[in-house]
Image (cartoon, rainbow, N blue to C red; front, side):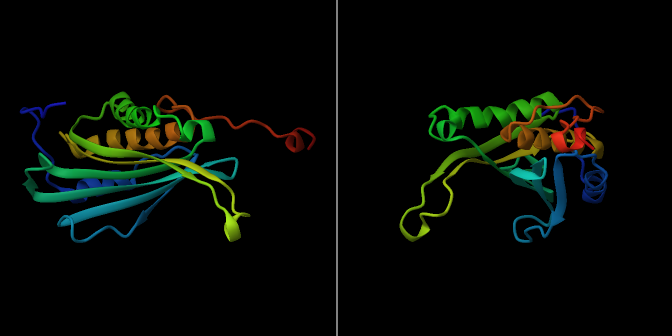
Length: 198
């Protein structure tokens, strides 16, 4: 995507922070604010999320919102979003050579479907396969995908940050195998046998 010359960039970080604090997250996400890096940009906000399903953690992620009032040539804007998403996958998927391009599509598809406008997208997708042995032989095998990416949001107004938060949320859920939900729809959890007998 190319920058829209008709969009005036948002310069008030406080208003963006307020929209972040008000964002409605999916029930499967546990999101909290964590200390943000202080040396990358004059202003920053960091979020940490865990994706939970039936009490089990399926994946996790972090999102850092950076703001430099003076702007950045490399960012092509005043804001920059930086994310790390991590999800467990099955062994076959972890060794699939198509995993990296698929993981990239999770991000772009999630941002595009949420209506988020962005430029200067960059990142890496990594497959991690761990097989403990020796004194660590009792440890479970690990198969996961990690996506690290950053992009510059095109914010015509502070509320537009919500589109990027929605895209990030969909990225995490998509990576963990949870289907996207239309706006305003809550996912119903399946009933368990012990609940049926109650």
